[in-house]
Length: 414
Ligand code: AMP
Ligand code: GLY
Image (cartoon, rainbow, N blue to C red; front, side):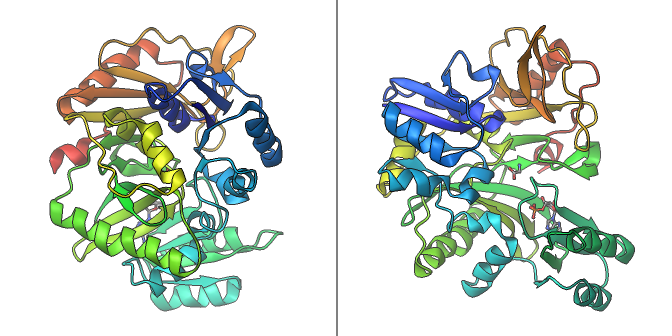
C-alpha cells in the first residue's frame, strides 16, 4: 500500500514513524513533511492547495491518506479525496466542525446530553460584556473559530475576561465568542478512533498547555504529553459511554458520518469527566506519546476506519509508558526565532526524536517554527520514560530552547 501523511509537525512525524512499521506499507509520502521524515518517506512539496493534493494522490495511486492537522480537515480535504474515490483517515468538513466551530460543538453537546461547561455564545460585544457582569469571574472566554490552541483565556478577574472578549469581537472580520463556566479539576485527553459507527478509545494521555512550569505563562499548542495517563475504569467507561458514543451517535443523527480520530479534551471534575473541547484529529503532542505505545498496526486500524470496518478491532498496547517533551524556539508562542542551528545526535535506546518546526537551511538543520522538536522517552513506567527523555535533552538543546522541566509531575502524583 502507498500511504500519504498530510502535515509537517511532530504529530505527523510520529504518525509516519508508526506507519513505517506496518507490513502493509510499500511506500510512504509526506505532504509537505519536515526534514525529520526524510529517512521514512518521500516528501511531496505542498502549499496547502487541497485539490492539487487530491490530484497528486490520484495520479500517484495513494491507497490511504492520513490527515494530521485541523486546518485542512476544516477546509474539507477529506471531501476532496472522497470525491475522487480515495480512502482517507480524517473527517469530512461537516464532521470536522466539532473542532472548527466551538459554538457548533457546544450545541451538539447540549442536544445529545454530553457533559460540558455551561456556556453562552455571542457576536455582539455589548451583550457579551453584560453577560460577563452577570456571571462574574472566574470565567473562560474562547474564540469560536480555529486558533491553534491559543484562542482561550481562563480569566480570574472580569477585566481580563472583558479584554479577551474585546480581542475576539472587535476584529474587522467579526467573530464569535463562547463564554463558559470555569471548571475545576484535572485535565486529560482521550483520543478515539471511529468509523462513524464503532468507537475505539485509545489509552488516555495528558498534555501540558501552558508555556511554563507549574502551569504558568501563556497557552500554547502543548508543551509535553504523557501516556498512559492514570484514569480509573469507571471514568474511562463514563468517557466512552457518556461522551464518545453520544457524540458519534449524535453526529449520525444529524446526518454526519465521522471517520478518523476524535480528540476529547476533558476536565475530570468532582461530578465526573466534562468536555473542554473536541478536536477532529490526533493531539499534538499527545500523539507523540500515545503512538509509540501502540503495538498494533496503525495502518491496518486506519484502513478499517476509512473503510467503515472498525467494529471488533482490538488494539494491543505495549505495557510501557511514554513522555513527550516539547523543545520550543526562544520567543514562542508570540514570536519564535527561526534559523537557529540544530545538531541532533543519534538518540539512545528508549528515546525517540520527532521533528516539528525544523528546516534545512544553507548551513544544515535549523529551527523554522515554534515547537521545534519532541523528545520522547519510553520506559517500563512513567518515571523511567521521563528520566530517559530528560537525560537526552541536554545533548540536543539549542541556544535559548524553551522546555518544561515538570512534564508528567501531575500524572506521577496520581
Ligand atoms: P480548549 O482549547 O477549549 O481546550 O482550551 C484550552 C485550555 O483552556 C484547556 O486545555 C484548559 O486548560 C483551559 N480551559 C478551557 N475551558 C475551560 C473551562 N471551562 N474551565 C477551566 N479551564 C478551561
Ligand atoms: N495538544 C493539544 C491539541 O492538540 O489540541
